[in-house]
Image (cartoon, rainbow, N blue to C red; front, side, top):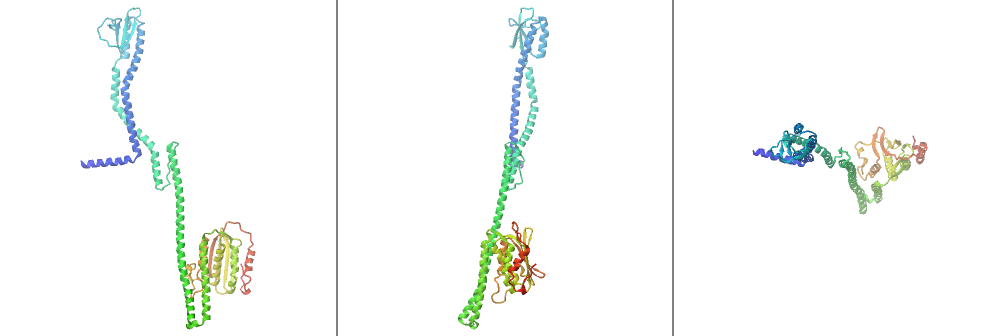
Length: 503
């Protein structure tokens, strides 16, 4: 018994939860109750008023028929009235009584005085044709018909009640489904929107208030989707910028940490030499020799500091607005500036430059990057070896290739060539030649211009490749031969024995 009660209590609890959480069930129960009440009240009113209405209608019809009967009696003799009385009672079911002029009961067929008690009814005075005697016809409405109707209503009560219940059940079901289905759909769509799922739409696009609400929810979903997508893109961009800035800050810290380390060695060497000369100890008595060495170290240190300043300038100017730069003309200028270095190493220069290739960037920084690469190629090529420079446009790109023949870079050095302070040719003692910042500066300049670049070994040397994004501006019409002649003029001052040949 207790188990059954617990189950019943659990069922009631679950039903209450389901009822509270379902608009369709609530609407269904309310409509069912309303339909049952309305149908029941309607049936009760019909059962109450139908007999009275039927009685009133019967009285009216009986009155009409009674008047017609009296008109017929006035046109007939007494011996002819019996048929009329019998036919009237058979058709109407009413009771007929006859009174004489003294209101004494008279038999309908014999017209003799009787002693019956007559209740009041509809009275119609008349005279038979050819007779001076007046009679009063009394008509009583029979209650049997009304009782028959009431009895029929009582017998039909179970059937009508069942029909009312059936109509109420199905009517409430369909009405509740029709009324609540769009609301339930909109509720599910709103729940999906709350979960940031904007792939659901309200399908109930009607012209009434529910349709307007569905359209509003769909518009809200689209606008929220657009706003959140924009916000996600902005957040992603912001996160990328923050990560990039953190990475830059980390690189700056590493760079300046390396700077402090690189500065210690030459400064320590100069201090040691100066202190040795001050004390006149051993080999330091030869002051001229060590003053010259200190001057060389300080000059190297001066160049090193200038490179650091260049790095700082590049870091500050990274976000400046870029302007159109004629890369072809800039490369020609750099080759002309490197003329002296090429002469000193008797380099054979091969050039092929397409004229008027325009890119967007900082001309000063790009010139420094190109000079670093070209000078690096010249310095690391054997004496008298060839150096080739090509600049060609490919669709919306500009490809620069610099190759120095006879050179080779060990595999372990290739991944670190663009690192700060990396020198693949470190000396075993003393202060090393070069700052180790040239290719590092080149890298940060090219990266700030979104230039893809690389250095790799070839069968006959080392090749540097850079891929620039060409600007969408009309090309100036230059003649390739005049462009090459211009480069040739810039490097014509070199020794004729080591003069370049152009392709």
